[in-house]
Image (tube, rainbow, N blue to C red):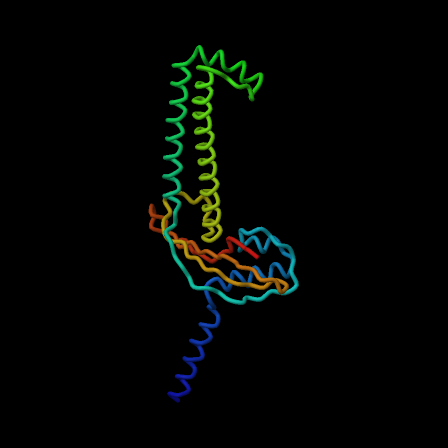
Length: 219
């Protein structure tokens, strides 16, 4: 009787392990089935990657080890704020420069507007070089801010899909788990990146349910 009980317990444990599967396996299975069915909406429920189209066959070849890193939202938000302050300082510097060189600017601007490729000489040449450098610095900084905003939006979108929590803000902190899997779609090899956002709402000490999602697919 005891032997039967042990075997029963072993069978239950083994069944539990087989159902749980490897990290990310459920997301990969859902995604593969969705592609096979040509169901783009179902694929989008587990993936942020571009929809590759319908497939005939798929197979999970390998699921790599799991890694972890801090959820970077707060850091990215702080960096964006710092960049915005730097841009404000640049704008102020340019304003002061134009105020200090007001007469030269009014001589310079009509000629520059008429022919952007015009070559200046003397003081106007130096003014053109200095003013162009200030404006380029502002343009570059503005692009950095735009890139930062895109990165923040992408991060929040991925975290929201993983946790089913729209409107994620700086009150969320935690870790990002990541794995890489090798998969065959119609006998073509792909590397799929999956992430799981293990977060906590620090204001209310609430941990939302979380799941693995696909964030990138590469041939």
